[in-house]
Structures are given as C-alpha cells and as structure tokens.
Amino acid sequence: MSTTLTRSRGTAHWRTVDLVTAAVLGVAFGVVFWGWDVLYLAIEPLFAALPPLKGLVAGVWLLPAVVAALVVRRPGAALLAEMVAATVEALLGNYWGITTLVSGAIQGVGVEIAVALFAWRRFGPPVAVLGGILAGVLEGLFEQFYRYDGTWDLGWRLFYVGTFAVSGAVVAGFGGWLLVRGLARSGALGAFAAGREHHGRARDRG
Image (cartoon, rainbow, N blue to C red; front, side, top):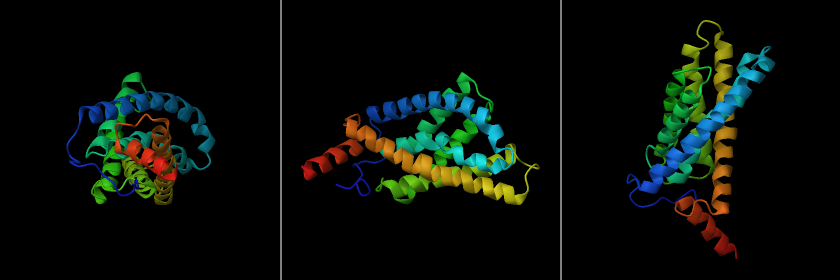
C-alpha cells in the first residue's frame, strides 16, 4: 500500500506510542540542534559576502516536524516534536535564547499546514517537501522581523526566504522522508503505518 495514500483510522486519536514517539523524536533532534547551533555559528562567517545564503543550511532545524508528521500521522505531531526539540535546544543553551521556542512553533505550524492540506491522507515525498518549504518560508519571514529588520534590503530578504525554502525542501523535506524510510527499513517503525507499509511492499516484491 502506498505511503502517499494511506492513513490509519481515527487520525485525530492519539495512542500512547504516538505521544511518546513524537516527544522522543523532539528530544533527539533537540540535542542535534544544540550541536548544529555550534557548527552553524562557526561557519556563519563563510557567508559574509552574501549573508542570505545562510538559509541553505537552515533546513536541519525543520527536520523533527517533518519526520514526526510522516511517522506519527496525527494532527499536532509536527508541532509537538518541533516544540520539544526547540525547548531542549534552548535549555541546553544557544545563541537565540527564548526566540528558539517561537521559531519552533512557526516551523511546526508550517509542516502541519502541509499535511492538513491533504487531510492526513498522504505522506509521501511531495507532502514532506511541501512541509519543508512552508516551514522554511514561515521561519524565513519571521526572522526578517526579529533578526534582520532594517539591516537587509528587500532583495536580500526575499533571497533569504527563498534559500530557506530550498533548504526546507531538500534537507527537511526529502531528507526527512529518506530518514523515515531508513527507520522503517530497520524495523524501528513497526508500530506505525510507515513501518507496516514498507514491510508490505517488501513482501509484495518477494
């Protein structure tokens, strides 16, 4: 059965395993974020000549929302995972402080919009990529207000939103889908539709 077409019955009904998995994903990615923050600040000077290009490496911060949406497949899963990740990142300590939580909410909402547009019935690469794009656009626009307001001209602002969207599509969207596919192949998602679909296809090919 195709991953782009299926959903479980009672989409709005959360199981304990759904809640725990979304939270665990958030914690794991929160730790990854903390490490990525350090690396990001280290390489930021490389973009001094054209600062909006920084958006190309920002898609990492959108991954938990995409992955949770594809795995848990419940309304709010993307937002929960992204908020937990942002909270862990902030608690571990980072450059952006409390605004990290605002960014987490915005990014999670972007992915939620994508899956909601398909009524939680499609979970293939197109939906994952769309989620990454929307999350990237919303976060890119938000950052114009609290980080770059008054320092960049309109062209640079639009360029930054565009590079953020590209990174969201490639790193978070397609990359997130590949990550979920890998987890399903390993057998780690046996309690979820993503895992059952993968093994069902494997049996069909066999």
